[in-house]
Image (cartoon, rainbow, N blue to C red; front, side, top):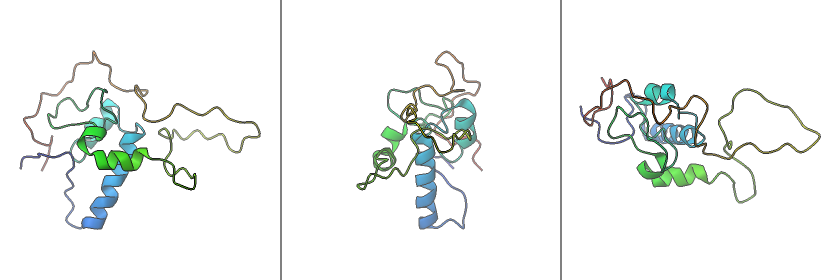
Length: 144
């Protein structure tokens, strides 16, 4: 089986509604930088090949030739998750990947963190880093 797209899900119990939820999940996590690390992109490459948020960023995983940025691979999903504020002003998606360190209720204004998507998250592969994997010829890596 040759994978030609950027999303593959091998779960026969996942119907169209399930696939939509999965796609929004992966797009949301990609957009806020949650997959933009060597480990994140390698772990997700059997299912999701749009782990790099924006055009202009180095595309990972480098070992898979049909990996794309979320912005290029699915402009509609990118628009959905990058529009993070509703008409009523409520934020529905965090601006950055949560790290589990919460500050609780603050009495003074807190300086906002860097807005999403991040360009060089902690642990992101460097431009000079050689990819250990050989380039795949259009297949999803390790696909069953």
